[in-house]
View 1 (spheres, one colour):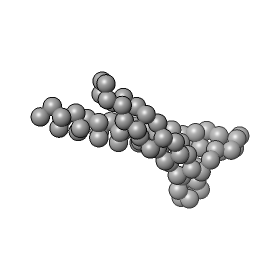
View 2 (cartoon, helix red, strand yellow):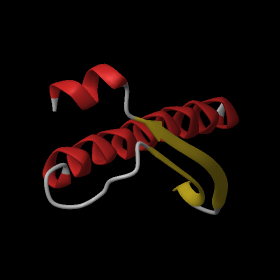
View 3 (cartoon, one colour):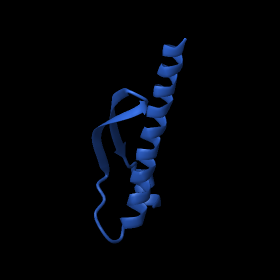
View 4 (cartoon, helix red, strand yellow):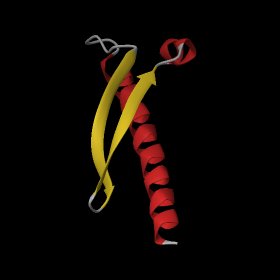
Length: 72
């Protein structure tokens, strides 16, 4: 049972971490669209510890859609 709960927690944590990464990309784009260049695609692989003593690799990729770029 503990392993299932831990796996669900890791899955949820990774999902929210990715959403936060994507949100950060959008906010950076909005803040700097007139001042500096913000890449249309951000991509990185990080290692995070979502539960104690359990490190996981998380591939992150955020691509701004054409509709978002035009609206921002």
